[in-house]
Image (tube, rainbow, N blue to C red):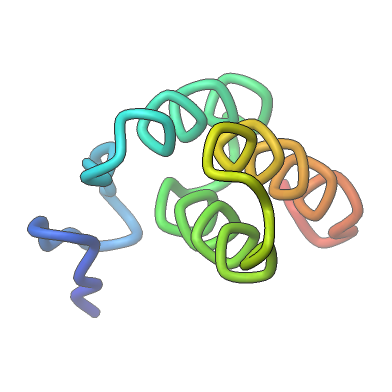
Length: 82
C-alpha cells in the first residue's frame, strides 16, 4: 500500500519520516516519534493533520503547539497502539 504524504510516497511498513511543508508540523512529527517509537510515522502524521484540521479557529501562532498537544493526547488515548 502506498501512502501519499505531501510530496513523498512511502509504505507504512518501512516509512521514513514524512516531510510536511510546515516546519512546525515536521518538528512535532519528530517529537511525537520519540514519544511513540512503535507507532508508524504515517499514523503520527495523520494525527497531527487531523488535529490541525480540528482547530480551524486557533490563532496561527498557537496552531503548531496546540495541534501537537492534541495529537499527543489522541495518540495517548488509543489503547491498541504498540
